[in-house]
Amino acid sequence: MDVPTTDPPHGTLPSVQRSYWRRWSKQDIFPEESFRDCSSYKYALSQTCSRLKDRLLDRSSDDNELIELPKASGIGMKKCLTWWDLIWLAFGSVVGSGIFTITGLEARDDAGPSIVISYVVSGLSALLSVFCYSEFAIEVPVAGGSFSFLRIELGDFIAFIAAGNIFLEAIVGAAGLGRSWSSYFASMINSDNPDFLRFKVSFLSEGFNLLDPIAVIVLLVANGIAVSGTRRTSFLTWITSVISTLLIIFVIVIGFVKGNSANLVPFFPFGARGVFRAAAVVYWSYTGFDMVATMAEETKKPSRDIPVGLIGSMSVISVIYCLMALSLTMLQKYTEIDRNAAFSVAFDKIGMTWAKYLVSIVAIKGMTTSLLVGSMGQARYTTQIARAHLIPPLFALVHPKTGTPVYATLLTTITSAIVALFSSLDVLSSVFSFSTLAIFMLMAVALLVRRYYNKDTTPSSDYIKFLICLFSILGSCLALTTVWNLDRQGWIEYVVPASFWFLSTLAMSFLPKYRSPKVWGVPLVPWLPSLSIGMNLILIGSLGTEAFLRFFICSAVMLLYYLFIGLHATYDVAHQDGLGSKNEEIKDDDSRVV
Image (cartoon, rainbow, N blue to C red; front, side):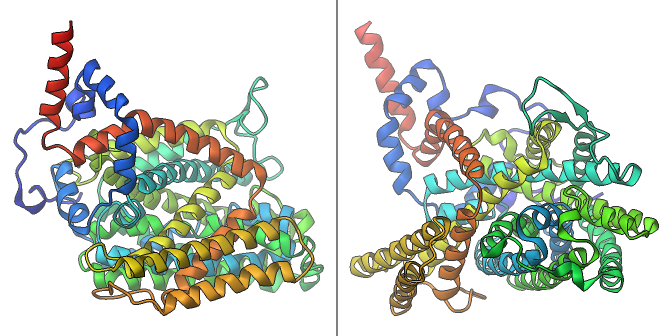
C-alpha cells in the first residue's frame, strides 16, 4: 500500500481533525453562504443574473489552481509517478478503451476496410490534442486536467460546461467499457450470442432494455483496486500492459499471415463520408490520455515526464491501432464482422479457436487496465471540480491512508455502474465521442488564448485582433462542417471556408504572443491548435443526429444544475469577503418589515 503524505499541501494544517467517513453534515456538503438557510438561498436566486455575468467574466489563475484549491483536499496527493509510469498508464488507459470495442462496429456499419483511414484521421486529431494537454499539464500540474486549464483561460462558465462533459465522459466511458468487458467475456463462452449474460426487460425502450449485472461487478472491482493507492495501481498497470503488448503484436502478425487481401475490396464501401463518420466514433479508441494528464499533480518532474509519457505513448499507440484495424479487415469481410466482439469472433471463424480465447483475454485485460486508469483520472477530475465548489467540496477530500480521493471515486463508480446496467454500447459511444471532441476543441482554443492574451500586458487593440482571428477560425470550421454534412458536391463550397480558415490562422500568426511556455510548448502555434479546432469540429459534425440530441439534453440538465446550485456556490467562494455581512443586512431588513 502507498505511504501517503500526511501533511496538507503547502504546510497548512486543518483546523479540526475529524474521521474521513464522518463528513456528511450540511456544512460539508453545502458550506457556502447562499445555502445557509432559506432566506440566504432566496436572496441568492434573486441575484442569479448579476452573478451569472460575474462568473462569465471571471477567470481563475495558475496560482489559484496550484496553491489555493488543493487546500480543500486537506491532505496532499503523493508525488510518486515518473515518465515510465505515465507511458504505461497512457498505454493501459488508451489501448482497450476502444480498439476492441468500436473497431468492429464501425467497420461493419460505416467504413468497411477504410476504418484504417478513420484511425489515421482520429489519431492525428488526438495527437494535436495531446500537444495542447502536455503544455498545460507542465505549466499547471494539478489534478483538474482540462477543467483547470479551461477555468484559467476561458473562465468559470466555460469550465463548468467542460466539467459537466468531463463528468459525462467519465460516466459514459466507464459504463461503455463495462458493457464491452461483459460482451467479450460472454463471447468466450458463447460466440453466437454476446448478450446471453444479460437480462432483457420488455417494458424498457430499445437500447436500454438489456440489463448487464456483469458490467456492474467489473466496475466495482476495478474502482476498488484504483482507490487503494496510486503507486500500486500504476505498477499493476505497467506490468500487465507489457504482457498485453506482446499479445497484441501476436494478434497483428496472425491477422496479416492468415488474412486475405481480397477482403479489403471494396476499400471505401461507404465513401469518404463513412470514413469521417467512423473517425468521429473511433475517437473513443484514443481517449484516456486526458485521464493521464490529471496525474500531473502526482508526477515527480512534470516538465520532463509529461511530454515523454504522453506524446511518446500516443505516437506508438496510433501505429498499433492502424495495424490492428487493417488485420481485422483482412481476416474477415467487413459485412461479416461481429459488432460486439469483432476480433475474437474473427479468429473463431478462421478455425483458430484457441486464438479466439487469447484475443478475448487481451481485450478483457486491456479494458480492465483502461478502467483502472480511467477510475484514477475520473476521480481526480471530480476532486478538482469539488475543490472549486461546482459540486459539494466533500468530494475533494483525500483519504489519509490511501492518499486517494475515495469520495470522488465512489461518486463516479456508483453513477457509471447504474448507467452500465441499462445502456447499450451504441448509445454510449455516440454521447461519449461528442463530449470528448467538444472538450478537446475547447482545449485548443484555450491554448491560443494562453499564448496571445495576457490580462496585464495585452493591449486592447491586439486583443480585438486576436478575437477577430479566433472567431474567424471557429466560423470557417463550422461552415466547412455544415457544407460537409449537407453533402455538397461542388468544390467551391469547400474551398471558400477552407481559405477563410487558412487566412485567419495566417493573420493570427503575425500577431505578437504575450506569453511563452516556461519549459516546453506546442510547436507551430497557431497552426497546430487551429488545425485541432477544425478537425474536432468536423468530427463532431460527422456524428449522427441522436448524438446531438442526447448531448443537448444532458447539457440542458447541467445548465439547470448550474443556475440553481453551481453558480451560487462558486460565486460565494470567489466573493467570500463581505458576503456574510451583506446577507445579514438583507435578513435584518426582512425582520424589520415583518
